[in-house]
Amino acid sequence: MSYFSLSNKKKLAADEGFSILELIVVLVVLSLIIGVAAPAIIGQFGSAKNRTAGIEVNRLKTNVEMFRVDVGRFPTNDEGLQALLSAGDGVAGWNGPYVDKAASIVDPWGVEYIYTVSDDGDTIEVSSLGRDGAEGGDGEDADVSSLN
Picture 1 (tube, rainbow, N blue to C red):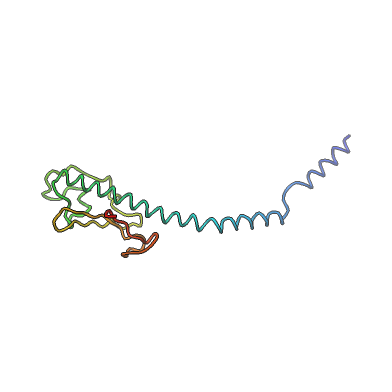
Picture 2 (tube, rainbow, N blue to C red; picture 1 turned 90 degrees about the vertical axis):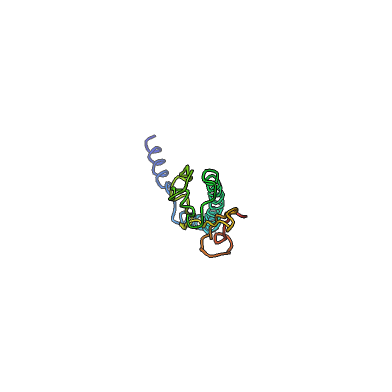
């Protein structure tokens, strides 16, 4: 019986592991899957930044409107979104900060959001020029605005 047991052990030892050909086939299949899936995943990261910018633009617009409720006017173009962080000189009724930190007024591409108030002081816009930092564009380069 000991001979039979020894023979089976030798057989099992010879069958263990993978051949080089099997490993190469697995690596080729994984490379093909990554080659097809990676561009789709990377595209989702870009559109996620645009969606994030859209959400943040609307949040900042709401914060500016809260500033207006407290102070009685929108921040001026000179004050900009910085008025949400700290009270400027002579701003009566300021009850902020209206955003948690300075990073709250920076878009996903690391540029401060653009804030404009109309000449009559009744209309505001908070916007981002997207990844390219230029007007217009598609995809991740598209502009995001609170007016849209």
